[in-house]
Length: 112
Length: 110
Image (tube, rainbow over all chains, first blue to last red; front, side):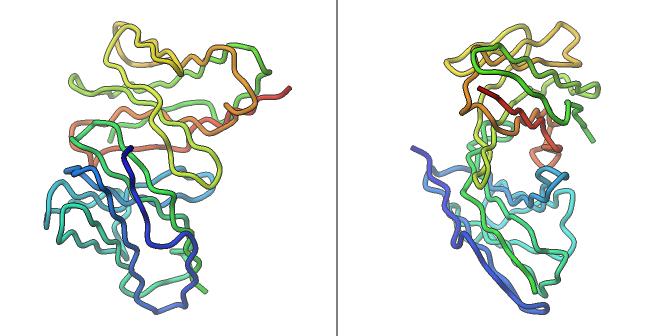
């Protein structure tokens, strides 16, 4: 079974803190994704990576950065957390573009 | 950007067939149509994917007309456990253009 794991299920941070969300997949997938999900807005793509050290902006990259130093790991970084970044963050991976995405359980981040 | 339109919510009863239609007027020639299911507090889960005509698996069927501007997800004989949000995706080329949208909240009643 494909497994996508995220470092935390729940996280509480303060405004201005630097936040790292980690995602690891064990299926040697090329593509990895970070989404955020908010009520009424569905899932919105933040960043996407199609190879190690390669990344592409999604719809809402502002306030976020990403890092992919190894194929299996994709990190989302909030350089200076703000209250409007309180959300559910979902990581996903897929073998090739357009193919089935496998999602992690999500991290519910609260920024106070 | 490719955008899909689907009903915000639907209600049905156990044992009924449920059809959820999605429109994707701007779908590109080489794009597939993909449907996901999401339960509360979980990430979305792939249900089915198709390019044209009809695709069937153990969970659902997907009907796509010749013009491919819409698709219909069909869930046969639904149960309470099918209560979830269903997303239709029709990305344009690059994976960075994937848009999940708000999905359809399906509620199944006894």
